[in-house]
Image 1 (cartoon, helix red, strand yellow):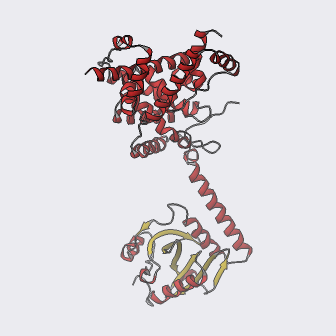
Image 2 (tube, rainbow over the protein chains, first blue to last red; image 1 turned 120 degrees about the vertical axis):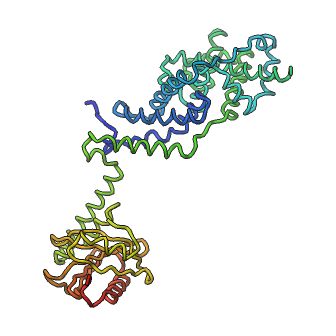
Image 3 (cartoon, rainbow over the protein chains, first blue to last red; image 1 turned 90 degrees about the horizontal axis):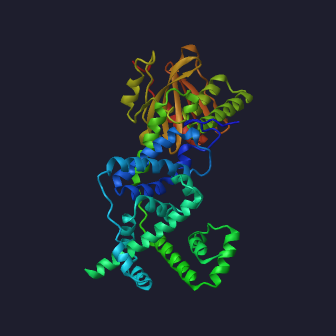
Length: 182
Length: 257
């Protein structure tokens, strides 16, 4: 029989806050990487908690991280549409990428990779690439969970993550190459 | 497994997401392919760097508080829900514990043949220890507590402050004892509370006899036309000390005159 629950029916199951508040840091990190602004990220996280609370009746158990991140991600993309429709992403620098040999690239990558350059490189990635790196490499979600959160098949998670990492590597190398030219 | 297939699986392999059959095939290929070995090393290096170097943004400490407050507001706004569903689990649990305490205390007292008034007073005391039921008026000032009862009772209880003696007055409450409204004056001793019930003795006076059962003490007396009944979980020595001080400091004239 289907179990009905509502926001206040806590006698047989853990409390809403007990399930979802532990994911606050992970949620904020993703929101902050997607929205690139502290205030927007906080607003998105709070909005996600309100929506999750309203939708708690549809929560089917588990640790709730993937379920909550799905809601949060939707909130973030709605905000991005509203806030940043006028912005255009910086074009991908094919020239620098192509002018270097594999061993040169690897060397440049090693020199440049530190916290600051990783931050900048990750910021340059399109949202779909950035979010997959944040979800997998920073927040430790499994491929299956990412498939649920982003709403794509497992195979797409695999290929998109590979492309995202490739792009990140290229951005790191490009940043280093630009610096040594100037 | 050919080279292109293998190259595609290096990421999932390093992420621990590859199934066993593909793992074995890939490892067979890796053993004979220096190019894939190098790619795997690079992949590991990159992921290691992302994990160790990429800043993980932390929310401000206030965000959690803000969210909890917003959730509480949301819950209290949900008035269409029946009240028992709106109780949080913690609240229900502590109430249940208190209710059990009252039942146990009352049951125990009645077994010991303690007069009904004392049973009731102890039950009132235990119930008063439930969150937010201890006091209707919270004040350490006797001149605030005493007037508070005016208009709520048909008599005016004497309110004595024992702060200098280590039993600070912390407030007052309206309670019901023996089917009539009575004043409950609350004192504190460390983490313990003392309820002092006061009402006119027109319906009968109290004999001064200490009840010491189940960790609770109750002691009643009558003075100047008023009944006093003190209840607490304090140890007997301190409890008697408290009672003596109240007796000494309540005036011999009829209170309120």
